[in-house]
Length: 141
Image (cartoon, rainbow, N blue to C red; front, side, top):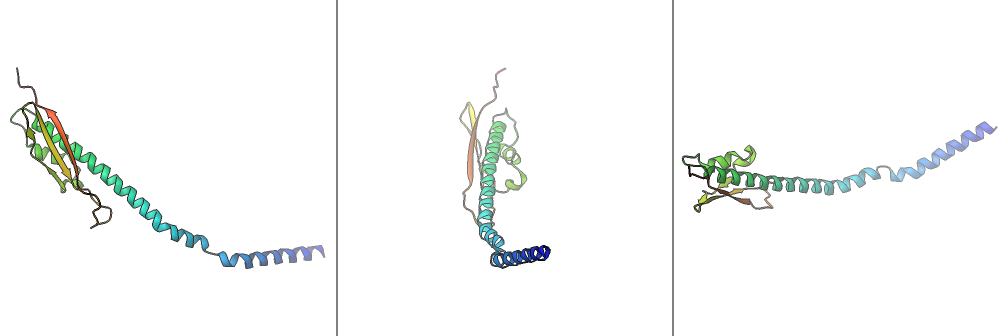
């Protein structure tokens, strides 16, 4: 008799658990779906900030390369082309380099790169601008 009473108690316990748990089934999935857009927005913001930092880094590289090339003894390669070639391929189309200015002892070049957007057609940030100054190469023998 103890065996049947034990089975009945287990069955009744299982039934009461089933009745209690039915109303909360799937609630974790719904809560996750509620939080998912916020998580995606945070991820996209992080990626966008990475694009901003990378574009700023590439603009600095382009400006330094253009200034270094313009500081070489004549004849030297085109500094604007050298600066543009120093930029990653996928940023090169949105890159402009101003003609280097010569003040006698040094040369200054400025590079401007458009920051790509994670969401096409939405541009939150403007272009990034970096300048670099390099001393001219010594031409005395």
